[in-house]
Image (cartoon, rainbow, N blue to C red; front, side, top):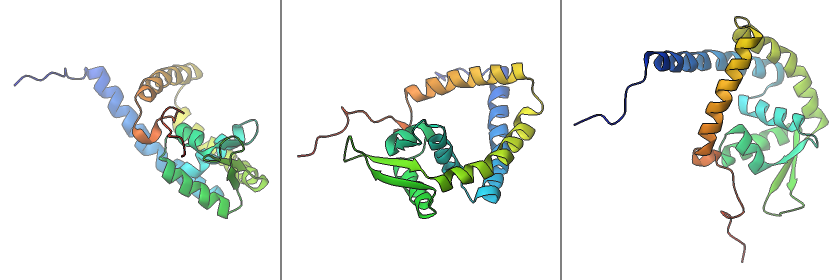
Length: 170
């Protein structure tokens, strides 16, 4: 039997191991800071940050799920928890009653304001303290290309919904 897949090169294997190690080491520290500063999970922070960055402070739930790369049902649950805390509101979309719009509230913006300074400090200290700005630009460029490639064939939970996929209501 022949192996159809060639082995990874030593450089590829080293990059892969470094990437997975950095991810595994960074995430728990980031999650701890988010929990302590704002009582947020990593996904809840991503949801609030995306809403906070959006010009209208709101997005359709499906667009949020696509951006956060989280299952739609899982993100719905996280949004429900944030809504119970008064950090977001949810309402039917005015354009499509099947869609839900999530909007950040002033309390949600306050939590982001409380979380961001420590979040930035954690990320800077753990991820960027040992790299130059040029290194960070190269890393962003490289990971951006990888992200584009992965999003071309994402897992089902991360696929964008299109109107062709939706079935019309009877």
